[in-house]
Length: 348
Image 1 (cartoon, helix red, strand yellow):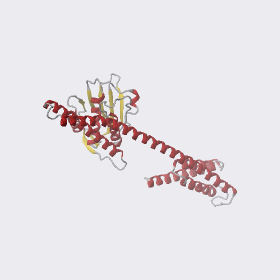
Image 2 (image 1 turned 180 degrees about the horizontal axis):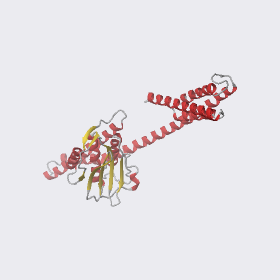
Image 3 (image 1 turned 120 degrees about the vertical axis):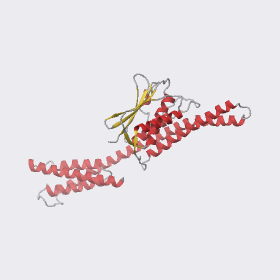
Image 4 (image 1 turned 90 degrees about the horizontal axis):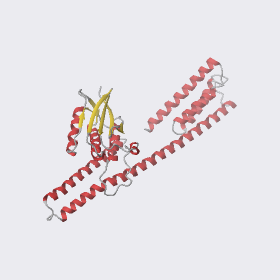
């Protein structure tokens, strides 16, 4: 990355200096004046110092600009006269401009980096609080149920034991999905990991999603609408399945009053658009802006409140879709409920 940035800076500086030289030659040829030449090179140095990292490119560009002005635009033309007062003054001015601009740019970038690191640390802290809150309830439930079975094994009836074991199984399955989400978002956010896309038939993807969703939420029906034509989409199918299942499960767990859940896919140009919508309670306006940041404010929630992985699950969804080059959004419907939408590019 550093080598690529250095090469980019060199090419940018060379392009700016070449453009400045060309513009000055044009001005001198057309208008026969040399008065604007130093200002154009100064502007070029300012741009180079502003857009490149560190001080090196700005200082080198200052030296090259002075040599160019001295050689091509100062009498005697096409000969160097480096000891003239004009040349010494130009060197001093251009160096001062390049150093000051570079210093200002470096300071600004440091402040932006510090701010970004501060925001990242804040997000990590919020995510940790969210995870701690979400894990507490199922772990407490599992511990309590297993203790009840062990301590009262001879007293509990068979149906009571089955009920407790069913709750343990459900909480364990939920914890497994939580860990899968955390592993996925960690994997996707890593700069060293690239998503391997494989052409996937849309109908097969949706069939797999619906099958897994019905196993997890067998009491909730989902209405599916997909195009009749054959559609193939390059993707990591397992990750996109996880996105769709997360969105469907979030609707089941959080859309209070929901009676209808829909999964719809349609095309817009070369984009396949996926929509998961419900007719539940919708999303509070204050949460919409930070819905995909990995943490939802739970101020006022009690310690024994129901498990909630909506924020973490949506953070996973956003990371996966970004890694696929798509965009994910959420909004409330005018008729009531919420709709989540993301798009992926189809094969030609």
